[in-house]
Image (cartoon, rainbow, N blue to C red; front, side, top):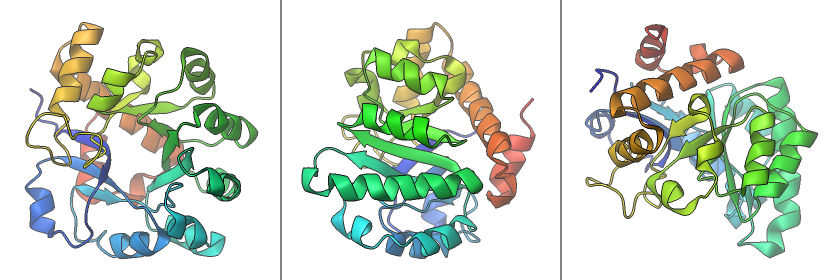
Length: 257
C-alpha cells in the first residue's frame, strides 16, 4: 500500500475529541459539522489538528441548524476553512423543505464568490440538488452518499460534480459505474455510513471502500487511494483553498504528481 494515508472526505467527529486521538486515526479526515454553533467550536481547533479539516455546516435535516443559519456568520466562518459540510436537502423533513431550499440557495450564492470543497447531502432530493447546482453553479461540489438515478448522475457529472462514496453507497447505488474514477472520493460518513463497514468502525477507515472500488474498476487498492488523493488535489487547486488546509495535508498534496 502507498505511504499516503487513507483519505476520508466526510465523517462526523465530536469536537471535544483530543488532537492525539485524531492523530491516532492515521488518516486525513474531513470532519463535517451540522450547525453553525458546532462549526464555531470545530473551527477553533483548526490550528491544533494536523490531519483533520473541520467544516462549516448547516445540515438540512436538523431543525436547529436551519433556524440558526445566518448568512453573515456563515460567510465569516468560510474564511477559516477549505471545507463546507454538511449542507443540502433532506426529504425526511417535508415541513422544512421550503427553509432547506432557501438556505441552500443562500449558501451556494456565497460559495460562488468564495469557492470551497462542498460536501452536499441529498437524501431523497437528488434531482432537486442538481437543479440548484444548475441554477447556481459552484466549483468544488462533492455529492456525498449519492443515490441519484443514472439520468440525474449524468446531469451532475456534466456540471463538474465529484462524488464521495462510503460502503453503504456502494451497496445501494445503481449508478456508480457511470462516474469516472477521476471524480471519485472516499468517505466513511461515520458513524452512520460505516455501521456495517469494516472494523474498526472509525473515521478514516475507508479500507472496505477502497477494496470494493478496486474490484469494481479492475485496479489495485493502492491505485484507488492514489487516485483519491489526485482528485482531492484537483479540487483544492480549482477552489484555490490550499492555504486554508493544515500544513501537513498541504504538504501531502504538494507531493502529488
